[in-house]
Structures are given as structure tokens and as C-alpha cells.
Length: 473
Image (tube, rainbow, N blue to C red; front, side, top):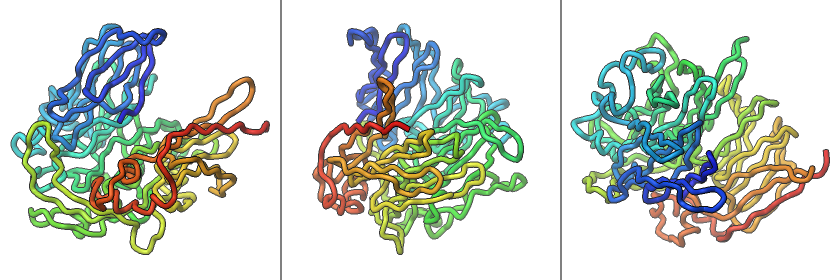
């Protein structure tokens, strides 16, 4: 898979599956330069879209399920030379952190904070992939991104908080040094990757304008932080079904400030032993995975495509072999008890941490959201419907059945004075892997095939671009 390309300095940048970062002449397609960023023989892959800022191109790495240690790196757009590389786990020098200046929730992280959170050398195969999305604030010159799950999925094999997997980083774009960080899911036991997009907005809170970062994590909590300081302002569930933790401790005087309060019943590790656990919400694909949310400055709401899905989780011991899968768990997925739907499209107030309205969907909403100034929000469904809803109320205004399930992102553009809306349909992704890959074993796709088996009755394979012209206002 590949999540896109970037443009800058007359070049197109592509991070290939074999971890080759390529710069192509945008006019001719000829290779200007290429560089290998990691070792695919060890399971490392390049799946994320690069990001260009000034004279650098930034890329991360996939491979947490192969024990690949995550990193984010900057390369010169001129000649491909590496400028800096910051790992997700390990020694301070390799993390590009200053133990006295880099902060977590307002306090210095201290020396060797990552190494102290791992047993032995497990950090060397610790995961924390960076296969998601990166955001940039030009005024602060900071890059924001999240890190993925620790390796292996069996938590018993990696005691400790496993820092800094599952972490939001704010890094200086020029040097890579981390200004602040925040770990959302210490010692992750459920594969709740923290790589979803970081949405940067300026909003008023308690009468004061704040530079905010809003992040809808796979763990089911919507986070609002001050993107200048890393102060945690909001951490609330954006699906009421989330049960692995009761809340995030927001008491600044508490020794557990900023940590999720894990429910023992839904832990996959009890008394130091791995244990088969049932009824965990959300499932490993998260309350939201890679389907991006949207923000409307007019309504000041965020529009979030979600998965309303729970799981049974069975961890098992796994040995590490370079280049071989290093997962250590099997899953099964299903809707929450008492629910018939496996998805919701949610309007979220990030200042209060509240759901404003929620539209249920039969399957996970796996497409990206699009918010428009006209007060209309668009999204697609796994059955293949493009839907338009009222931004304030969620009322459905229009829907159109495309030929295949929609996992792409809805876009809008203008041409010759007319506005258009377009979407690619072609079922796939984690939720659609059974149909897309022709799989029938219900445990395949890490449990997704069984959970979404009914999708076969509603859509078919395909790849179609559908374009709509909007009427004049």
C-alpha cells in the first residue's frame, strides 16, 4: 500500500514499499535522486506520504508488526542527504531529546526515560512505527506526529511503559529535537497505534485564544493539547462504547496525571500473565484508524468517521526473527453488545470533549470527512454511499450509491467557476480486507474478515472516480 506523494522544488517525492525515497522530476518523471531509508529485509516498509517543509522532505517507517524500531527522518530535497533522524525508542541521543528541555505535561522527561521503560534490549525491536501523517506549524516551526504500537502485541513480553510508542511528538523542523511529547497509551495491550492525523486549529478556550492540536486516537479518546507547550486540555471518549479505560486522569496534582485508568477486566495481561480477554472496546482497528477527520472553522466542530467495534484478544508468545511477522496475538471483531451498527459519523466539540451529534452506520465509516463553508459535510460508507449531511445537525441531505465501498477521501475543487465534489470508491483497507483479498477464514485479517463478513452482501470490488457538480448557491 502507499498513502501518497509530496511535491516541492519541482520534484515529486515517493517513499516506496522497499523503503527507497525517490525524488522525481515533476515534468519528466526522471529520477533526480534516490536513497534507501531502512532495511526491508528486516520488515521495514515505506507506506506513508512524505511531507515537504522548506528545504527538507520528511518520511517515517512502517513495520511495527515485524519488530521494526520506528523513526522520523528529514532529507535534503536538493540531493537526498539525511539531515536528521529521530527514533521512537532508545537512548536520548537517538531520540533527539534533551532530558532537561524536552517536556512531558510540562515537566522535563529526565535522562534515559525511554530506556528505563523497557526490559533489557527489547526497545531495539520495539515498534513505534511512524506510518501515519505529519503536520507542520510554520509560526512555531514544529512538526507534529504520532508513533505506533510497541512490538510485540503480547504485552507480557515487553514489561514497562514502552516509551515512546503511542506518543505525540512535537519536533523542531530544522534540527529534529523534540520540544514536547505525550504518551497516550503506556504499555499498549491492544494495538492502539497513535499515528492518526494531528489537526492544528486556533480556538478560544475560557476566553483565551489557544493554538491547539486535536487528535482522535485509535484508543477511543479525543485529545486536545496546547501545541505550543504540550499542555493536555481535553481527553474524552468519542465513542461511549470505549471500555478499556474509564477515563484519562486530568488531575495535575495526581501521580497518574495524563495516564488512562485501565480497567483490569479488559487488560490482556493479568498478574504478569497473558490472558484471553473478551469484550474489549474498541477493537485493534481503533475507534478511528486512518480515515481522517475534518474541521469547520464556521461550526468549530470536528467531523469524525469512526469504527464502533469491539474484540476478543488472545495473546501468545512469539519469537523474534528479522524479517518475519512479530505479532503475538489473534483477534475476533464484532459490534458492541446491544448495537447493530459498526460505525458512527460523529460531530465533536474538541474544546469540551463532547459529542454534538452522531449518525449511525451499518459498517465502519472508513472514508475521510470533508467539511465545507456551505454548512455541508461529506463522507463515504463501506457499502459505497457518498453522503452529504448538515454540519450543525447531522441530518442527511443527499446520498448516492457508488460502484464500490468508499475508503478514499472526499475532495472538492473549483474549475471554470463551478464547484465539484469527487470521491474514489474501491473497497479495501483493514475493514474491507476480506472482500478485497477474497479471504474467508473469519480470523484472517487479524479478525476483520469475520467481523465484516456481511459486507459482501452490500458492495463489490471496483475502482471508480465519481464526480458531482454542485448547483450554484
